[in-house]
Image 1 (spheres, each protein chain N blue to C red):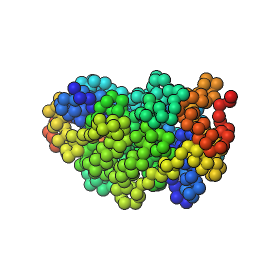
Image 2: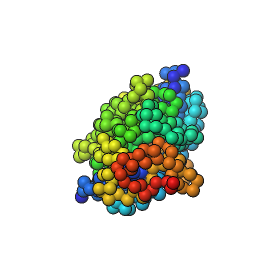
Image 3: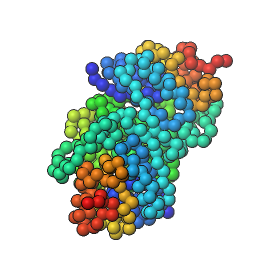
Image 4: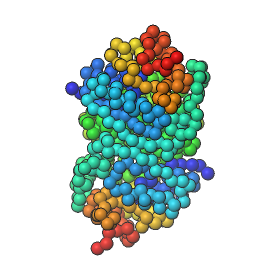
Length: 228
Length: 228
């Protein structure tokens, strides 16, 4: 069975991406990165999601991005609330973490080299994250080019690294439907950027708003939705 | 004054690279990464080198690469000793850290975005590190291409990121001569992969062997050389 590395945040998109990798017949090694994000709750979710979806292994790399600042997810900047779809699409949001996906894919690439894998799975989505430059297909192609010259396996001609982003063109509703089809337990996933002290999703940050809209459009009840 | 980010390990090459960035007129922001390397002594050296060479700031990002294994620098594999130049050149050594420079440059890129800088300085060298795929010019060009599509500044057309590697074509002796010319205090730098418990360089790992040969060829005494 071919091995792959799946970047697993514990959110909805990465859970469905792991399920897609498994459905394509890969032995999946899940990798989470604890980068000092405020919503560390995601990492607990990642462990549960990895187990539910039959990942062969799950590891977490600690990386303290607070030293390089620059994002509402890692620094002392307010997470925006109650934004409309238009507001989200208008500009790169303050929750954008500089070069985050370059760093995450770099870690996945290093782990893949250690495992002898040449397939990376990544829950990037070009529609819901239009404001994030490192969620676009051209970014993933540039990373594949880099990977082929950056690694032992690439240089020795043994591997051509591929970054699979099966959700790239999906709307959030399509992500929900695909997750349902592939047996993802949505109750284990976590999306909120800014949970209340008791550990409930805030329901108002961009991630909560997009998630709620996706479930509503798909006509699926979200078992992890905040109570009324 | 234009800002740049300099990856600073505390070794000889990165110290001379920082000196070159300063000599080119940049306001230099030094970035070190504590990636669980055995030779943490390097990080103390980095702080001293940053101060001596007039870096505007110096930050250290903690990243525990041990979770993804794969190298004698981060895992429980022996550091090779007493290898000849031919042995070093013959194959990628066990001290190669998978995708290390992709990860380091990714962090430097994120920090550059936070600072509004678009120049990265990196002590890569294609001659002494012939066995490392991610020390070659084609790797750096692929990273520049990635950076231009991965970032806010790149996408908005405000920056074309450049990775400067002023030592790329230098022999180790030329690095020593350039460092001397630029006023680097070599006694502050640290190269050894596997220091003795008392904190003395081993004198036998690849880094020590290359360093000693470089100083000898340059006809310069190394103030940090292990005693007789």
